[in-house]
Image (cartoon, rainbow, N blue to C red):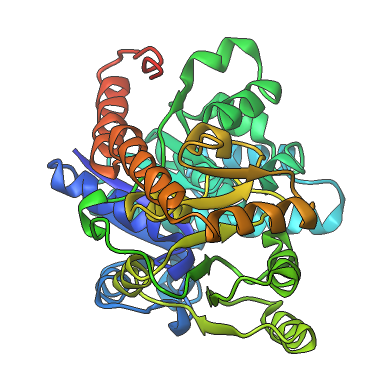
Length: 404
C-alpha cells in the first residue's frame, strides 16, 4: 500500500517520533510519502535524517501559493464534492468570523493535498496531531474519497476538544491511533460510544538498539533535561530544585523555545550552573543520554513523552510528574520516580534520592530499558499501525491489543 503522512510541520527536531514511525513503516514494506502544511524552520533540521526527509516532503502552502495552486483551487469549484466539503468546513468551524475564515483556508489547503494524494496514488492519509492539520486531512479525505486516520496525542487538544471538533474527526476517521489508555479515555469522553471501537492504542516508540548499554556511574553526576523550553515543561522548578541541593552535579538542558532566555536568566539569578545546548540531533541526544545519570522532566501537561522512552532505553532513570499517560510508561519506584506536578519540594527530594544512590539508579535503568523494549519499540508499534491500516482497507475491524 502507498499511504500519505501529514503533519503541520515535518520534519521537526521536537517531533522525531513521527520520523521514526515513518521509517519503521517503510522498513515493514509500506510505501510512505510525506507531506507538511508548512516548511520547517532550518533550526529543526539538526541532522542528516531530518534534512533527507525535508528534501522529499511535499509542502502544501508552497503549492497553494503558486500559480498552479491557484488554478487548482479554481478548478475545484467545478467539482461536486467541493461544495459538500465547503459545507463541512463551514459546519465544523470554530465560532466567529476568524474561525470560519481559518476553516476556509484549511479547505483550500485540503484541495491541494487531495490533488497531491491523487497524483502520488496514495490510497490512505494518516495525520499526526489532531488540530489544524487534521482538519485539513478530514476535508481532503472528503474531497478525494480516500480514507484517513490520525494519531491523537494531547494534551492541548483536550483543552479545547470542541474548538477542534474532535468528535467530528473521530466520527469520520477510519480509525484513531491513541498514544496511551489515558489518551483513549479522553477520546471516548468527546465522541459517541458507537465510535469507540475505532479507538486503538498505538504507542509512540523508540529504537532501543540506538542507545548505549549500561556504564559506570559518573564521579560527578550528570542530570539531563530534553524538551521544548516552554512554560508547560516546568523547567523553573528544575532550576529551583538544583539551587536547593547540596550534592554537586552538572545540569544540561537540550531544546529551545519561547522561554529559553527567561530560563537562562533564572539560572544565573539562582547561581545554577546550567548548560543550555539548544536543539540537537537524535544521535547527539543518544550520546548525551549515554553520559547522563538522571533525566528530569517536571512537566505540567504531557501525552507520553518520547524523551522518557529514550532515557529508559539508555538505562537512565527518569524523574518526572504523575500526569496523563506517564504512569503507563514509568512505574514509580521501579523505572523512575514520579512526583506531583508543580511540587518543587517533592522534585528536590526525589532528585536528591537519585543522585545519592548509584545502585538505585542502576536498578531503575535496567527496569526502564526492559519496559521500553517490551512495549515501546517503534518497530513493533509501526507493525501494529500497519495492521490497522491494512485491516480497515480490507473491511475488517481489529480489536484492542491485549494489555501487558
